[in-house]
Length: 162
Image (cartoon, rainbow, N blue to C red; front, side, top):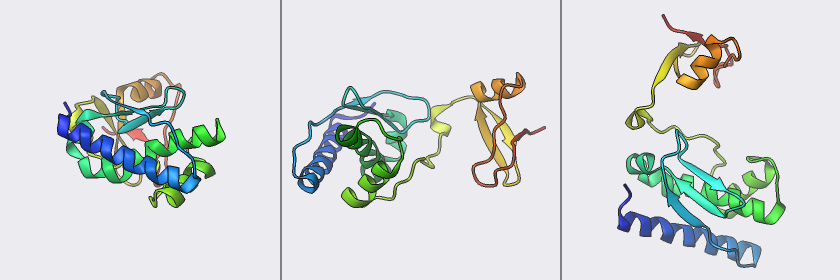
């Protein structure tokens, strides 16, 4: 659970980000609602039409600084891009420009957080780089012959470890 003081710090950071966007675009954006619910492996999720950001409380507890410096700007960028441009590619040129030009952040699309505190069951697969954990859902799709997955680094098809 996220403490009241941490919620206030997150809301303060959210306001800081929005003040920067207001100044950059010379307009006032409607502030979103922040919620705190578990959401699989997602550090945060922007709900565009609801103008809401959900943050994963367990991942926040273990990666607080990254939430202030990376996760919150990432999700705010999604909301702002939607308000400015409508539906575009989620991590497309508009989102990347927002991250870089407005928030001075690297436009990273994935986090590298330790997911072990989530206790999500997984199955170990291998590639040329080493071990990769696949979710049970993805593993079942491989077993049923519906999918193959590639390593994001070496692009080799993943195979199950013995």
